[in-house]
Amino acid sequence: MNLFAEYARWLVGRIGDAFFPYETPDFVPMTIILDPGHGMSNRKSGVFDPGAVSDGFRECDIALAWANELRTILMEAGHKVVRTRVDHSDEAPVGRRADIARKFGGNIMLSIHCNAADGKANGTETFYRGVANEGIAKRINRCVVEALGTRDRGVKTESASQHSRLAVMDFQPCFLLEIGFIDNPADRDRMIDPVKRKAACEALAKALP
Ligand SMILES: [Zn+2]
Image 1 (cartoon, rainbow, N blue to C red):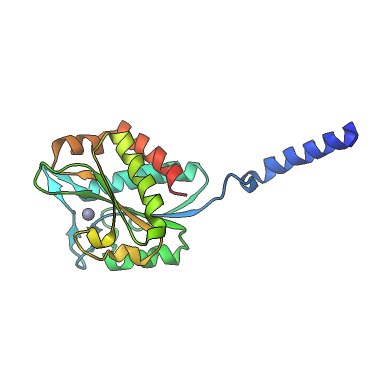
Image 2 (cartoon, rainbow, N blue to C red; image 1 turned 45 degrees about the vertical axis):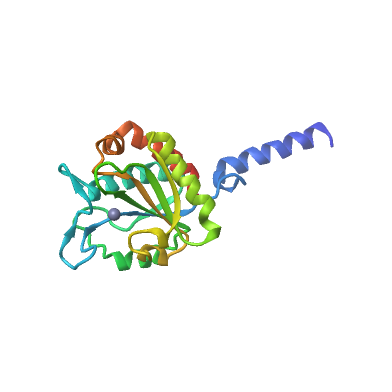
């Protein structure tokens, strides 16, 4: 190939990159569904469900803050993000959240929650459905454990959850992240720390797609 032909090929490649930046093989834009746990009409129509509450801190607030942080990072990366609820007045029955994910053609769904127990229990865990999704669940859990410094409680199938079957997981693949324990002061401090939250969400934005 002569030098001119080689230059012309290079030039066409560069122009192509400029016009179609998403067509490079290492980036595929996805539709990611973020499900901030609890909220208006979650369990009962017209009744606000704050989730676990401890010392005035509410699970619904922490979940929404994490979803919004992660949403910003994912959108900046070029992904499409759909939230199952956008604020505390937005009605989102737990039985309808998988429908939202389907309706918007989600590629993957992350449901965000906090645990609560006896004040002593602590750590991060992620639930999933189906052996094929165990690897992604592990990646999700590791992102949070490393950014927050929480104890790694590991990944579990939904049958090990408090509900034995999780309605959100009627959409697949779906992962339910329990960031930490809201009634454990050390875990709670980590979950509401904006610097740690951002670091965790930046790692999650790379692990999800
Ligand atoms: Zn919850």
